[in-house]
Length: 345
Ligand code: SF4
Picture 1 (cartoon, helix red, strand yellow):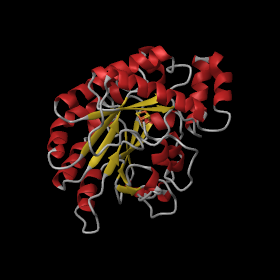
Picture 2 (cartoon, rainbow, N blue to C red):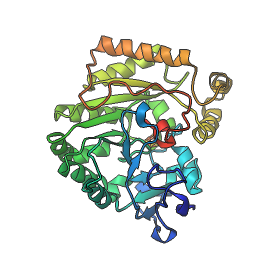
Picture 3 (cartoon, rainbow, N blue to C red):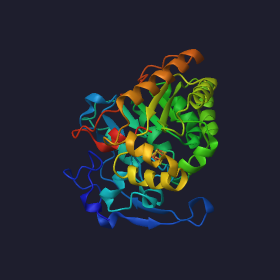
Picture 4 (spheres, protein in one colour):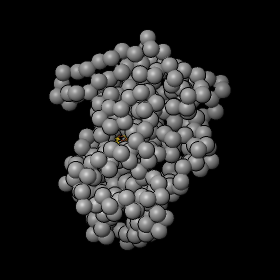
């Protein structure tokens, strides 16, 4: 693996200083069924705060990503490409070769205490899920949340992981001293589709339970309805069911996002489509003929439908600190960090 080429500021731009040296890598596996077939690469990172290039189009400028790779294994995951920067496979390798920055909490605490740090908003879950299964074993997030709380530093988390509820007390404490924004990603509620396309994630209903619980504890929680998968989760009845469930869970906002198929994700997703839904392959080739994004007319149609449904269902405005809508996807801006541009799910 190309550890020596990794960077600390833009997370995978090779222009910056090395993130970790080869001697910092400890490779581990665990015997428990939960982690069968998964290899963890434990490293000591040199920095944990990543600056987002071209942040003007994003609602945040700084990110913290304690993991790379994600056992949630979503077939469409936009972050798959980032594994290639480690010379790791973007398919099964992304799902099963997980990099763990074991010193993330202590590093963050130190960096937050630096006189140069201005207390800006920090986004988590923008590259891979910080509450993926590995977090159950490594427990990095309690230390990270503790540091953010102690420095009253505003932050947001985007996750599909129910494990976030383990840290409810810390989230509550943090929300008493700073702006905390939580978004849960639920693109659809179709359980058959979930089992095949998001095989390592908690079921959509369990994720909505997270929304419900956070709301009951006074921590407003939005839902990123992502991805809406063309021809598989975009039927008006499916959109309606999903938005109704999101509303019933008490979400403060719902933000739809249509599937992107960038390199890394595209090959893996299309191979899955050939196996599972071969009759859709031609339609996908046509819909994504111009690149990674579905046509604007399609994106606008989905956005309009979801917003109308949200209004019907009475989903209210979001809390301060989290945008009601993330920016609509645009063709890739080369000045922007891929990890952020692509991984808002
Ligand atoms: S989409 Fe999110 S939860 Fe799914 S594999 Fe990627 S980072 Fe993990």
